Image (tube, helix red, strand yellow):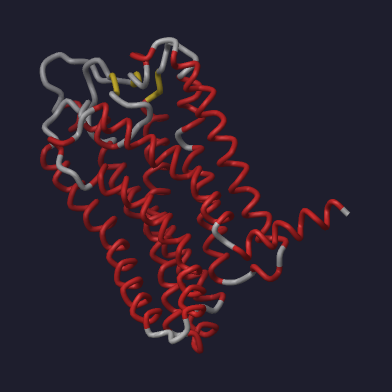
Length: 316
């Protein structure tokens, strides 16, 4: 008998699959949600693919800032695709089940991408910091090898930290009804189904969340404090506006991402309810990824000009 099986109390049987509660209480409104979420998903996928292709075919956008934007767009594509397609399918069927292995795979992918995005946003903030505070050294400090190392470090951190955390979760025995009070395999709703006391595990997860979510956040805040000081020292109003404009899109994306992440993962266990968890999860799994392509196109003059040139060239 394995150690996990030995810890199962009484004669409860272990779960081999989970069932999502999702939006079952909404009844026929689920078909309306299907149409809405499908439209948002297609818009998000299309928007991010356009950004990636546009940067790929436009030599003037082959700069560190847009290198990181390509990484972010690819990450957002994977991020929303790890959750939304399954959620769409479950909006149309009564049997909203997922195997234990499928749940683990979804949680691995989702959490790795989430932490990678935290680190990637910090790398993007560092890029803006160097561009504004050390413009004469920008080419050297943000050379292609440095950009590759920063992107690789972001992905490596996400993979290593979250692989260890999620592997630990799925060594736990799960039993009972196996009903997940959520629409995907997020950490806290799944941990609640464990047959054993998980209080020590939840403390470790809380500390890890604070450490690995807040550390990139603090790096971003420090970068923008230095950026703000540097911008305020620029003598001309036009120069200050130009400097602010290069940072505004990133600041909006960071605010959206960290606003929901901090609310979800840093708050204590007692503050979690199924309703608030699902509402905030919709923000960071559906709404925020959909807004990012809009933010980086409508507020970015270079991207809009490149899009116009490409469409005009193809039209001719």
